[in-house]
Length: 484
Image 1 (tube, one colour):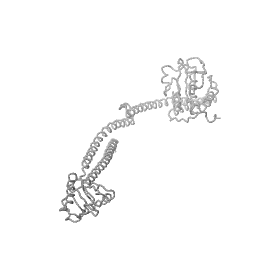
Image 2 (tube, rainbow, N blue to C red):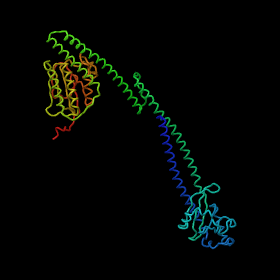
Image 3 (tube, helix red, strand yellow):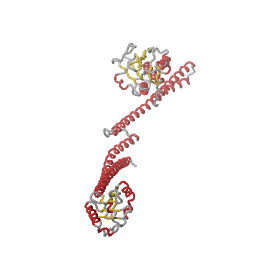
Image 4 (spheres, helix red, strand yellow):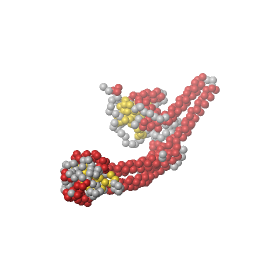
């Protein structure tokens, strides 16, 4: 079943259930109230009839059909007949359900005639004989109209008055029921129309966005995603447009990476081929060792390029924990200094004497410092590394005395494959930025002429070299190894 049909079905079903349920509840409450009011009216009429001179104990003395000609009986009969202004029929009967007097002529219903219809109202008669009055449920007469009987005991005697009154309260109740059914039908039709309108208004944009997703999946990324509206669908379309641009950017990065991989690998492979061929042709042992050393360095360079590409291409996961940043920084410094031996590069390190606590992955901290210091060493001859605490963050600064970053390249310095060096894939700073984002931190290039945050180790290295700062999220908590 389509989303549009489900939406219409649910909305229409909800509307019908709400309308019919509310109508049924209203009808039930109204019917109960009207019936209670009708019962009060019937009992009032029956009770009033006993106050117009009907003498139950005296009427019990008339037992033969011929007694109907007595003057007293005739007067009682006349009173019953006058009740027909308010009721359809009236009867006075004994406990054995035989009639004494009625609004019908005595010749039609003689004294002592059994009233068989009373057998249907045994519980109501028991109540009337017990408490003095009762009302029967509504029933349909021979003319098709609803009626009720009311019973009222005469002077606590064994004579009972029964009156028949039309249950006219059912007429407006029936009209009310028809109105409710009509309202339910109208409500259902209106709900169907609104459901179709709303479903169309929602489903059509979703269908368009679905076609856009299929278009993107098939590699047709040239057409932008149209913004649907300002609501959730609008946010979804804007998110899909950002996804489209991200896919395009990722595809472009992949193309650049493949081209760069081919370029960066071709140069070491060419050197390997040249040096290996020369090593095979020479008979001089010293020259062969020198050539093999160059082969080894080219292999190391090739391996470094591959590692950079893998580090950039793989998903990055961070196991952050609270620790002292000085430890991974010192490990990175030790590794970098081993590579500096004999090349004239000077590394100056300034770390605080107290623990520099932050939440990060120690291996990621080490990688960031390695990349920044190695980039700085390629740019200049003197590198300064400093770390301190600032406004709830741990700051690590790496500065060099090289030529600095050109102004036209500063905005793109963290993009992959952007480099002004003859060697290298241009992934070092892009990897640093990804690592910092994964650890909830950030990295920035601090221009020489910019107003800087307080630096507890100000030092002029000369030149116009670059300074990069990374910021790690700090914490006031102590790590487990430092807890008292």
